[in-house]
Image (cartoon, rainbow over all chains, first blue to last red):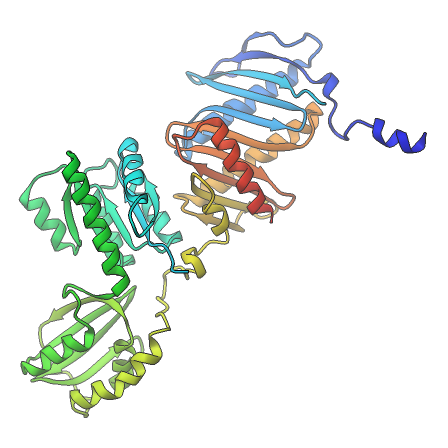
Length: 98
Length: 358
């Protein structure tokens, strides 16, 4: 049983079941204007994702490497962000396992 | 295995860059072709890669072709340069040749012109292999000195090899002195004659120069023949220029730079942003700071989301695509060609990751 238990453990740090799925739009001032993310998902985290993405687009411009779309790959989640006139549309998609 | 020549093409029009890249990568000498869409990017690449040839447009926003050529002449004097422009103006052509370019070409328009253009570039690359001093084709430095001495001339021969400058004083057909760095006299003369390539310039005679070399020029040339053989294998290490390692790449990111589509790369130490390796990067300090800040925030976000380890970040841009990778001690940012699809970017980043980690 102890041996089989090794296989039943999920990979550490990846909690796929709780990861959010959906999208949201953030404007250039950092205000979230629309969201299809589950209500249970912490709004502060949504805001933090949005802020990081906005800053990424902005800083990319300051180093003369403007970006229009980014893909952030975590072991259990993919974040896709498209630049929208200073704001961004952001998609969160948990990765399927197995 | 002979080293492939490296060509750098500078043009602000991305579509043209890609066209030239396709054309020139098919040359018989199979050159490695690098592209830059700005003067600053071109200079950064030249610092990282030992290129044989620079093809540059003249009319560009920001730093124009003449500005680039001025810097290149000073920092990379042995680099062959070709101007490729749509400007048809005799004055501009004369100005470009006065700056020491090898060829002034109009941008090819028809099939025949394209073939001519390709042949010209291949011919220049072939000449690179045989060495020789710029300005007098297939004349060695020995020939130049003999020519001056036989004609009983008085002149000062200024020779530049990379960023090292040397002078040989000739008075009434005799070599009277030479200098390179801190060396003077016969010792300097022997070092200079050991150089395989460089630029030369004839300056006005300097009759006040004190004579330190007493041997005849024939004896001197015979004595130094042995020194030439010995020094042929030894490249002059140019002070102030980055030392280019085996394979012509100065940066430890050499292996990464050879991955498909990579235009520039920078890796930075997580604990100390001043510890960085850069290849072909225009503004390494700013890019390092951004990379560190961004990756730090994304790692922290991953932990808050419980989304697992940050694997990679891809960015699609209007000038370059970007990729970011992480190692426990360093972060990496690579610039990838603009025209790559997302799947090509993923494949390239995977290759970059393997080489960088190993």
